Amino acid sequence: MADDAVAPDFTAPSLRVWSGLPLISLGPAGCISGFLFRRESPCGRIIELDTSAQQRIIATRGASLLEEYWGGYVALFSDPSGSVHLVRDPSGMLPCYMSRTGPCVRAASDMPVLVEPGRGRVDFSVIARMLASVDALGRKTGIVGIEELLPGERLIAAETGTAINVAWSPYEHVRKRPKLSFADTAELLRSTVKDTVGAWTSCFDSILLGVSGGVDSSIVAASAVPRTPGLRCLTMAEPGTDGDERRYAEALVGKLGVGLDARLYDFGTIDLARPVLPHCPIPSASHLMQAIAAVHAALDEEKRIDAYFTGNGGDNVFCNMHSAAPLADRLLALGPTLGLFATARDLADLTGSPLATVWAHGWRRVWNRRNSHPIRVDLSGLTAGAGKAALDTADRHPWLAAPPGALPGKKAYVAMLARAQKCIELYPRNSAPPQIAPLLSQPVLELGLSIPTWYAVNGGRDRAVARAAYMIDLPPLVVERRTKGSPSGFLRRLFDAHMSVALELLRGGRLVEAGLLDPAYLDRVANAAWKDDGRDHRILALCGAETWVRWWEERA
Image (cartoon, rainbow, N blue to C red; front, side, top):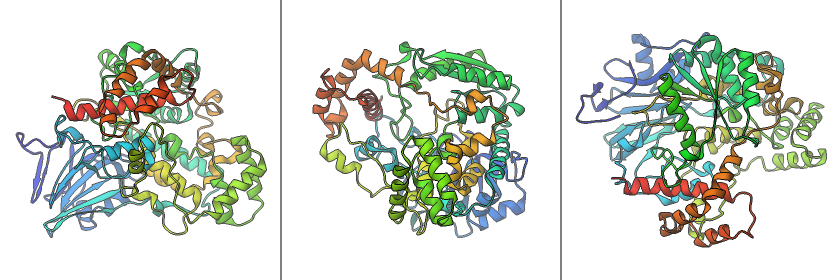
């Protein structure tokens, strides 16, 4: 965080750094802000680097940092030519937003440091893309002039201007052929995740972990418990719906021997006119976060919380894929072997589709293998002009540009990873503890990229490698679970109770005024005869975008 009224924590030629986190020195040339761990097993936190490691990092422009260490950090240093480098680690766990003016760059982990709310100019084309699909987003944020340095990117600032290039690419870690058997891969995943999560837990004394009783958060819990005596678990519930996952969470904590706070979503904590996580680069947060934030505040009063842990990103990292892409990958990687029939059966069991349909979709994936990964968009409620802006490809995530020969399933998997890293920050860094999503850590990402996609559907189960890896650590009710909980019942109840308030907020709002939202869509939603199961989520998402825009444009 930059504050010219406060002395910087580090200075070097052409570089000044203010940090709310302890800095790791790179000598007189720079520093690392954030958390850093060594690659060896067991992982350990790095507090300082020796002189040779510092020199390697600067000489390689950060390449040795990415090869020898991992964490949640941004490295900042100047090279002998006077150019300044910013390198963001591949996990994306420390945000990095920036404004560029010629050779000058200002970067921060909280956007309001760069633009004072009330003075920001909203980029409605970015809001349109977000409403159409998070996959359509690139480096731009919803505020004009503010970009995100994406995970794994390097920014170079020189006298002649600035440039951004890829310092870490997911495709460098993709393998087309299996290196290990399924069983050996599962064991390697277990040891990697346990080591990685354990390293993160060593950084905090008091951790609150959100658990749903699903596979991903349960894996984080099982990995954290041995090294975190004070771990607390929280599950949120909506009684009488599939959003009530308390029995799964209770089975989990019973197996692990830790405590559980089970809280209900509370209508009284929701205010549709109040923005949800407005400090984030795009208004993608659900109103559920208002209810969760109220519970977090209450639990923090009972006992101070140093970090919020989450299983977010697990679906993506563990390759929760329900398409025929794994079948196409196996054919393209190994040829027409007997194993193809096993993968086809696995996909039929997983998706409930006839074998003929699985084969047809798999062949279609093979036939279209040279095409880019398709981005699915939802233009409902948007005007024609907004729809055109949403489909503009000028600003796309660089990971979507796959190299020639990339397998269809790996393209989809990389897109899933990029999606998982959008807005993983929970609260502003300068006023609240961080949220840690340890499953997005670099060692786990790199291992996941190397695992064949057909392993992920082995036996007709999603995330099959992860399930096999933690079979002995989790209760059968959790590890064999095939249903997925959802707070959609609470959101539907919220919409039904406040539909008129939501529509009034939108009808006189900035989204309509800016030509983004079609007023006729709001009229159709208000018509009780119109049936569309997605309208509650869509209207609430539009309300979230509306209040986010107003916060940035109008806040005193």
